[in-house]
Image 1: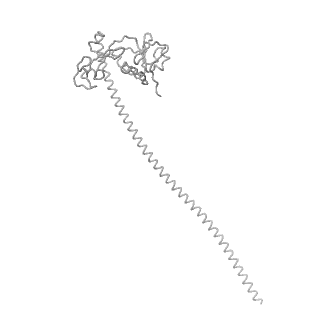
Image 2 (image 1 turned 60 degrees about the vertical axis):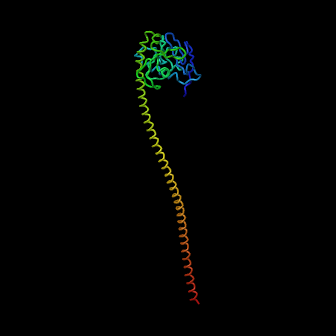
Image 3 (image 1 turned 90 degrees about the vertical axis):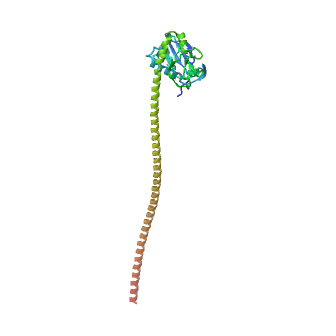
Amino acid sequence: MQSSVVLETQLDGLTLSRRGKVRDVYDLGSHLLIVATDRISAFDYILGSGIPDKGKVLTQLSAFWFDHVGDLIPHHVVAVDVDQFPAVCRPHRDVLRGRSMLVRKTEPLPVECVARGYISGSGWKDYKTTGAVCGITLPAGLRESDRLPEALFTPATKAESGHDENISEAQAGEIVGAFEEQMRRVAFQMSRGETIVQDVGTLSEQARQALDLIVEATESAATGASRIALTSREQELEFAKLSERVRRIASISGRNRDGAEQVTTSAREQAAALRELEGATQELRNVATYLGELTRRITNAV
C-alpha cells in the first residue's frame, strides 16, 4: 500500500515555532519537536508535490549518524521513538512515527562544517572557477568527484534562507571565534563515516553477490521445473496415446466377443437343427421299414 505524502503538519495542541524548507518545528517548552515532511526543496524553491516517506528517510539517516558520532561530541537529539516523546505528542503518533525527533533547545553555530575528501558539489563548482575551494588551492587537472590528496576543512555559512556559501577557515573564525578550532577537529574526526560507508558498500556488494546466487539458483530451479513440466507433458501425451490404444483394443475385443457370442449362438442353433434332422431321418427310416413289412404281408396274402 502506497503511503500518502505529508507536505505540511498541523498538530493540534502543539505550538508551531516555524516551518523550514522541509521540516516543521514545534516548541514543547524545554525541547523542540522537529518533523521532517515530504516537501521537495530545489534551489530554495519548494515544489508543490512531494515524495512519499521522504521525511522518514531523512530522519532515519540523521538518527543513524547522530548515533555513530555521539561519542565525539554531545548533540541535541533526545529521542526518535515516538513512544518516548512527551504525552502531548501521543495523539499524533501516527503522523510523527519515523519522521520526527525530540531534541534539546540549543543555540546553533551559524557555520556548517564540511570535511571534504572528494571534489564535488559546490566545491567542484568553485574549483572550476578559481582552482581552489574555500581559499585552498588544489592541484590542476582534477575531475569531478576525484578523491583529494588529503581531506580538507571547507566551512560554509548556515543561511536561514537562500544558499549556503563556502567560506575560508579565517572567515569561519571571525564568525564563531574560538569554536572554529574545535569545529575543525571534530569535522575531521567524523571522517570515520567514510569507513562506515565503505563497510556498508562491502556489505552491499556481498549482499548483491548473494542475491546473484539466489537468482542463479532460482533460474536453475525454474529451468529444472520447466524440464519436469515438459517431461510430465510428454508423459501425459504418451499416456493419452496408450489410453487410446487400450480403448481401441477394448472396442475390438468387444466386437470380437459379440461375434464369438453370435458364432456360438449360430453353432448351437445348427446343432439343434442337426439333431432335429437326425430325428426326422430316423422317422423316415421307420416309415420305410413299416411300408416294406406291409408290402411283404400283402404279397404273401395274395
